[in-house]
Image 1 (cartoon, one colour):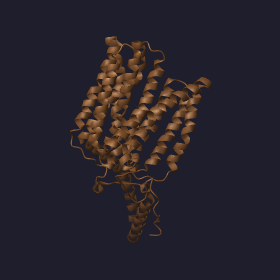
Image 2 (cartoon, helix red, strand yellow):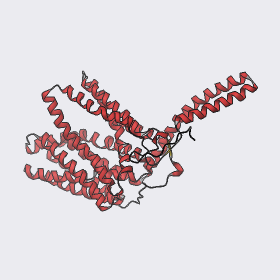
Image 3 (cartoon, one colour):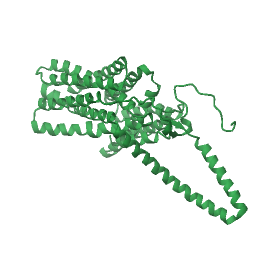
Image 4 (cartoon, helix red, strand yellow):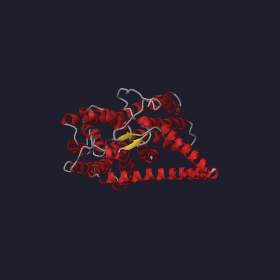
Length: 429
């Protein structure tokens, strides 16, 4: 979480000026090295530090993958494409349980990490060789090579003119140019930071975005505690054997089918921000009723049925929630909106929920009551998203932002899924 939360806004900010796929290549390279480090770890802190750097690799996907999908998905299937992407998270959990169990039982646990690193290397390599990518909302600028050539010509011209006047003046001009270069570097960094603060102010002033993130925080508060304390509660309340496998299996299966269903349903309804709020609020409210009722049963089997239905409904929010985050802001802010949403739901949602629920359980000393109190938080989450239905919302995906396009490196000028245009070299011009 440390690496993920720190690196996500950084990747989102520099994606404005560097090819996003190159950033993903960098992130996955760090991820691969960190996973190898986990395999060679020798104590708690060595593996903890390596796990922090694993989060850096994850951060490269968090802010960049969703805008890329949103740019290239068919108009009538945008949420479905997003849902398929987010469906990979519970799918990965499921495969991870199987893979880790097989490798751990037949080989040493360290080989599980080494195998992961080997599987990731091709994807990290692809990040560096894939065709250049231009995200919507960013305008190309001249390549750094061309800029350097222009600056060099300017310096040489200046030098020649100064030489005709006075040789000593020429050296003085060069010194001033060096000082200006250093100052321009500092100014460039300050400009980036100023842009970040300005973008953050715009995000925080967008009521639709803020409401969506607040609902997501409450939602993830519950899911985070479920994933950590669910097996413990199941064993204590229902004397459930293999509670880890049962809760894990329910979460994986319902996560996959629920996430896919939410995306396809919103596309069927017509993908708009108000419709997305209607779907997430209704699904969360119905899911909360099922999960809350499930914990009221003393028999384990009705509990499992209702809890599975509840999780199926709750996971249906994944695609629509991220659709809102992407479409309620200007295209140039989508990467940052995804990054800051991720940071918020972790810092205020699933990270503090586990220890707080532990404190609550120590106080009430009854897992059924604790589970009911925790599940009840889904109702405020549904209420917050319900408010979003009545907010004035504008889908900004096609918003004309030419007055403030972000200049990016010239390598970003070709969308990945389009044909290469005829290339024209600077020399030919």
